[in-house]
Image (cartoon, rainbow, N blue to C red; front, side, top):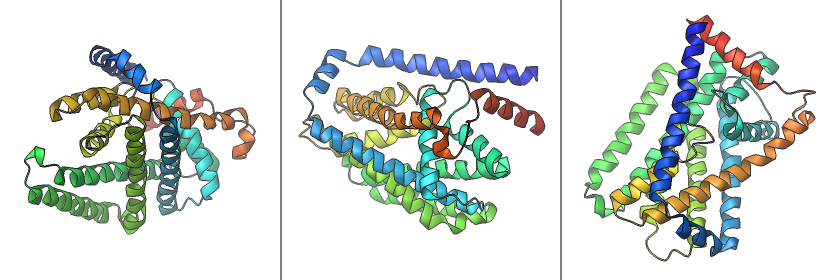
Length: 308
């Protein structure tokens, strides 16, 4: 028990260090006066379209997760799953410690439907993995159309094809139920990333960018992968720092790359706020009271102890 407490402390300390380091690096590289002027002079009509596009991406993402739930025989209506998904979005930003929106949803659904934790974790894991696959595929597509990388198109396409084939084979070999829904879930994964790319395009238009979009969209996609790095506050600073580093590497306007990333972060933050409704009104999820953070943390610790 004491060992697990130390591990949790170490994990949370790592998250804080990563976030503070990213914010420090961001503060040293971002020209805040230029950033402020970009926001003040932005076209708010396009920013509204960016917000709308991001909301659609989250609706598709909720449906994708529900497809994975159906694979483990958990049948939720799309409406109910969307409500729970929105609560998870909020908790991804605001829950402290090692508890995030995914862990909260797993605990909530296990308690409500008496489904094995392992099955729920598998569904959530493959939901996330499908998103990473879509990011990788779309990144490869952008690289093909960017000659500045000097990477032969054949190599990029081969990597995408072999990577996808290996991924499907491993799914079929060890996780056959998820492999049977591959087409359905991964088309949705591409849909999620497609609408998020559209969000980035609207942000570029809002910032009156009149040069090539593709380098900034590629930076947006690759920096999105850094969201898997353990941090706090919904990867605050981490993605933005990655955008600056990639912008410098690709020799494009890294200030613009960071601005896109920061606006996207605030759009995702604002989009998560309706989840507050279900905290204040649990009846919206058919509950008199939602599980507390302490309950979820205790469950995580107990699960780890039982698996030791």
